[in-house]
Image (tube, rainbow, N blue to C red):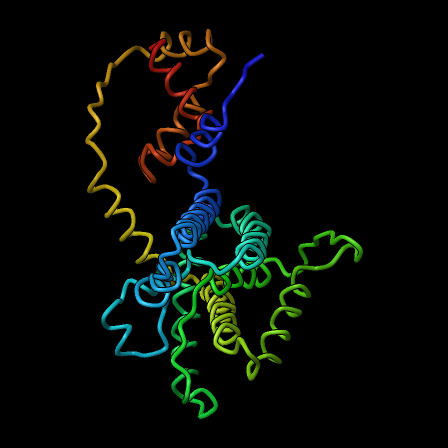
Length: 298
């Protein structure tokens, strides 16, 4: 019986996995815990500094003021990973988990990351425009935090791509994905003048991006391709150059060697193609094991 520790599971499913959904969930939860620790220490030492709120308001939250945004442009990304309270992070992560699994099943990890980040950015832009355009909000200078716009962008994209995908909801039964998306859309639309108006505007911005992204993709345009290319280039800057030794062998002897391990040449070729397209880090643990066995026996 093989026993694994919590750290082993974390390395397998998050650190060493190419699963972007797991990574997004882990980052959001880790940052939530970090701010929880900051809050706890602040209160234990009765410092009255309100460090948690100060950091959120002045450094990582996305501001409604364009001038404030120019002083912290990174906030259009950082706000997507910061939450206020347990239920805030819980419901956002639940939506991301459900919608992200469906999206990833059809379009993969790279597009999931693009929709998450760009959907969150679109939500932030709509929030800023609304806060400065409508007289109702003229007396306010709020900021937003949370992955809501990002998660609902993924949900809207999945619902646009596969509207008839059916989920089984407790106490309700089977419901098509498009109806779940329409429910959230109507809730946000009817809440635009409420207490969390800024958040609801951001949700609608994220949902609109998810819808437009899929429609553009169906017409042959990947709106997130530039981001995928940039992130790949950035990642390669810090990736050590691999020293690959190539041994040429006769095809018959290679096939015979591979057959001993139960690994086919087609499996090896598919893995090598994946490395050529996405890099070694895109392999899951099973693919890495297959490649290791094949290289050892060859």
